[in-house]
Image 1 (cartoon, helix red, strand yellow):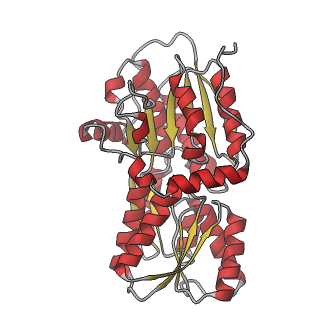
Image 2 (cartoon, rainbow, N blue to C red):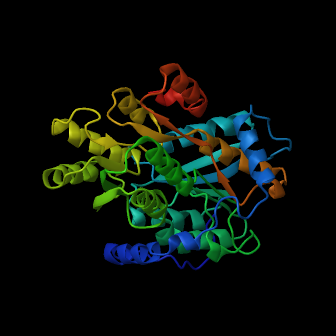
Image 3 (tube, rainbow, N blue to C red):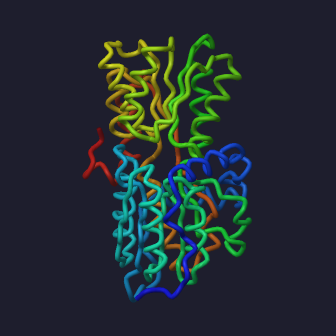
Length: 376
């Protein structure tokens, strides 16, 4: 059944206009967001984090009809983070004994118009829950606002744990049911602290960013500032659009024209492109310092061969598990126990760690997805 609603979502916006819009917004976007723990008591967040880590407790109310869920995310990303989140979500929904029908709508990381088309579809359909991992929050902001405003739809924003201040301080003022992610800003600071503690300051650094916008600012600009404050010199900056091939090409060009000691990446896919280029150019592991972001199976292989030296590892399945738990809480009428924003657990791991120690961490981080996607 179609919803009778006039949409404000336009699909004719050119790529240039999108680029200008996110670039302009990126200038001050860190001021545009609340941090994940600013709008809720920390106990509410910690309680949900514990529930996510614990064994599942099935839903306590009868659900007569399956709930309809739309999952809209950049499923075509070559890293395994989204796939592991998906596996964690569906497995936990089954364990919680929640009957549901799931529609998945994928796109590439920079395919903004494709995702906006999916959001338009979601608004017209009778979904109970729409989970959206925006290709870029500023680009998709209006479409997500339309979904939040639609009676009967509960929205979870995925891959962001930093609520937009523009949407108020509560769900009544315009916030979605929840923001779910791994705090990009915290991850950047964890990596920055690791760099300061483990490397000399006399390094020349190249920055490999995603697309201009909020995620790049939190992951990339923050890390850049920490390194500059420490005394490192940023000699090269490039937007590789979260794309492996673009990062590969940028690295080939970079190494032909610049003297660098370190390449700082802010995604697994781009790290893969950097590693491939350095291999092809004949660099030995460790000759150029490279990091990862996420700690998934591909990055674990690079850590094992010393082709990357450190990464921030997310308990990756958690960001799928928590989606299911939020839906359970909502169906049980426990909205006051759902924080406005949730950030999953992260830690820095490096190539010097004991194999058994990393194995123990991964056993929990990939506890739902390891059967389908493996540990490495």
